[in-house]
Image 1 (tube, rainbow, N blue to C red):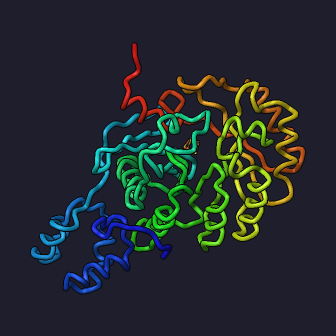
Image 2: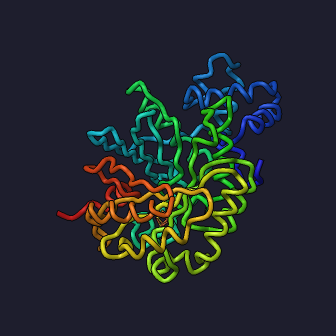
Image 3: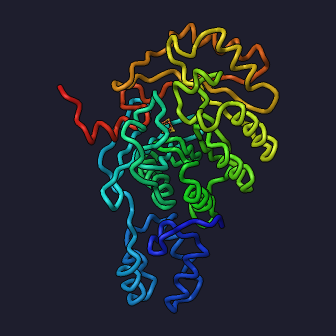
Length: 354
Ligand code: SF4
């Protein structure tokens, strides 16, 4: 277990082993820890009252000192293609966005890792108000559990997790590690590390820690520009970790984990979508296992960018592919809802003026 500061009253953030320790410390048999873990993550228990097979005295004791604080729904938007955006409230009233995305194989869930974000990327609604607070591991895992509750009504469930919602997961590293262990645990949600993608704007030291963690998740790096000058204009993180550090760390990640790295590249009309920039991008990332994912820009009122014309997107893709690099264009899901990250939370907090 990665060392992290965890509130031991926050049972949703505790591993099966830690729940065993807790139950033992209360004089209950250790196996109750595994039972509680299963009740939390397989049966979505909201209260100890639901665990009727337990002695009443134990249930009451836990309810008093270790209440189960699950996420609650504030608002949801469902697009015709099934994309579902959830605005969920935490116990302190802060809100977080979670998105369910339909695929041929089932659903993926896009999990948020912070309330707001400190990274300040110029194209992102989430960074507009800065970082408010970190999410706990339990709050992150509960987004997956809540997604499963919604999908149960569609006879489906979550098969993949993308930690790509609001926040920079690497800026919440200890809780990210704990979250990965929680959702991977066989007694709980039981998701393979290989079905989990963690994104980053490029926090190089944390990327190395993830590479060395023994958790072979897919790493997705938000690149969005093929050179330092342009990337610095779009992503302030490039000042601390320029491409000369970022790309070698991506290579290290691929070598250490045996997983190819995904590069996310948002196409902004007239900003980073030219032919020369496509060549520059391909030359930057070639030489180790990776994949380039081109993302058509989804306009956000607060930002001035425009989407690239479709023909230019296809031309950009074909140039990158000429270098033998795997390159796809992301499907546009949920077009009619507030689909860019952070939009739903911002709209809910600040109603758009007529
Ligand atoms: S794109 Fe990601 S890292 Fe950048 S401000 Fe938005 S949430 Fe933060």
